[in-house]
Image 1 (cartoon, rainbow, N blue to C red):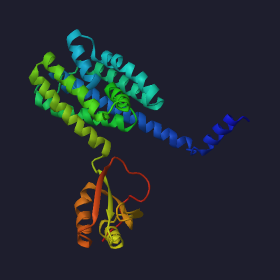
Image 2 (image 1 turned 60 degrees about the vertical axis):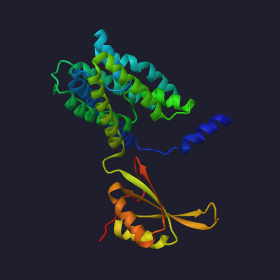
Image 3 (image 1 turned 90 degrees about the horizontal axis):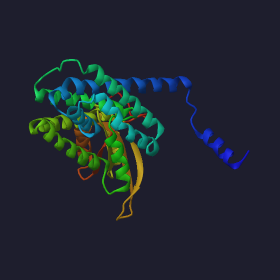
Image 4 (image 1 turned 180 degrees about the vertical axis):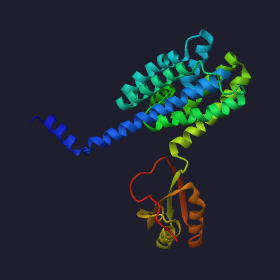
Amino acid sequence: MTVMEQMLTNDEQKKPQIPANVRAARLAQRIVMLIIGAAMMSVALEIFLVPNHLIDGGITGISIMLSHIFGIPLGILLTLLNLPFLIIGYKQIGKTFALSTLFAVILMSIGTQLLHPVAPMTGEPLLAAVFGGVILGVGVGLVVRYGGSLDGTEIVAIIVAKRMPFSVGEVVMFCNLFILSSAGFVFGWNNAMFSLIAYYIAFKVIDVTLEGLDQSKSVWIISDKFRDIGEALTERLGRGVTYLDGEGGFSGDNKKVIFVVITRLEEAKLKSIVEDWDSEAFVAIGNIHDVKGGRFKKKAIH
């Protein structure tokens, strides 16, 4: 056996052996969620946004405007315009992401074709912007959560952010502002402003879909009364805590750091507990997109 073959064998041995039925269940779950997400995106576009001359950001927005100008079916444009970015995504991000994205985009394109003859739910632009934005946000959020994307702009943003001093969010925002502004010349400025409302709502709903309604927060607490605070958090919140060793950057003193994960609804109570024991305690709170494993499940409290 060559050295390279030995290395590959060792790498394979390091990988966890996941049972076939578990892998199949995960794949089935991903496929179902991608189908639901793509279907919701199709409904948002053809039942709410497109009939009212409203657009989304990114490639979807460009496709809607080109479809209106040249009379090309929206589904065809969605597939053709996203295809180059899928190839880039395959090379730069990974096979699973590219295949999941391709699957979702094709489903979305088919969905828009099937729903095109269906009458719109409303002819009021504001209602279309609100409800279309919500449905669109949930659909896109589900696809992203399960490893895909419905818009090539995000792929470009990821690649550009690696090479330029801009974040992914800043690149996406710049592109979408340009696209949404262009809608004013195609559909009129009133519709462009309604489109901006739909985009903003969708943007917020995507965050909720990715993070969940019961958003988790990570908390770091530094206090000399760490043991009392930790026990109080366990007793009154029912949350397990972890004690970490730390060292003061200026003083060099050894410190104990309490780490705990809570829900956003428990934040106020946690602050109250810490305040009761040590009003000078250092508390840092951050958002978490997902929590799995460990002992995050809430214990029974009295």
